[in-house]
Length: 264
Image (cartoon, rainbow, N blue to C red; front, side):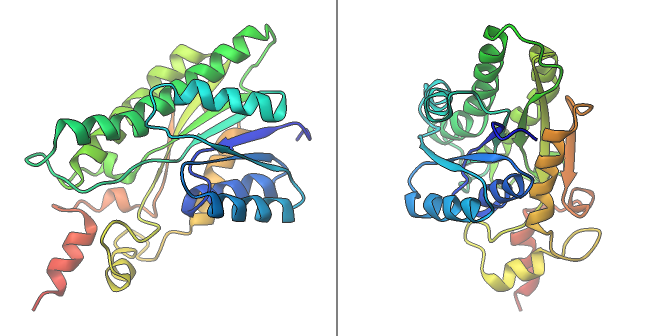
């Protein structure tokens, strides 16, 4: 691991993004912590990374902006003098609707943040590597964070699910298009944090609805992203880090199934 290797983690101020930043830092990577509004959270991540002996720089951006990908990579270049060796597209929006209530605004908002900007970030990294006219051979990588929902469909959170389905279908296509300069893989976590309107009691029950009947460890999910970044044999594939949750089909989102079962 070179002292000049950087990872860009979007949405790194909280939750899985923060966990991913710490996993990379613990393995010797420097971190560019993207955030939108959570400056205090981003500063906490920065302090935690620096406590591990690595550098962490902050890069604010609104991923709903059509030009966000270009602007964010430009920030990386200005901050570090080079492009990140890995981009983990973790940030996303997650708003409740279904196929009957979905609006054009909701669909487009989810698509821009959850699909278009991650894909464009990968393209922008590829263009930078190509312009350097140097052999890459798998050194640079992009990890698109997905969701076990794309492998285990139910009709809830429609706009969110559609945006993640589009990103999941793009993994192999983009891997083919960006090779050999940049590898592209997916990472599909299961339920690892309180989600939407979920109560703690609901979460505690729902977190065990998987083949292992135990909560998913966020640190282990984060290490999957690190594994992809370091393993040049991985390209165009998706790792499913969900304790087998995608193999437990449900008619509704797991939080709603739990809620129904709790009713007298």
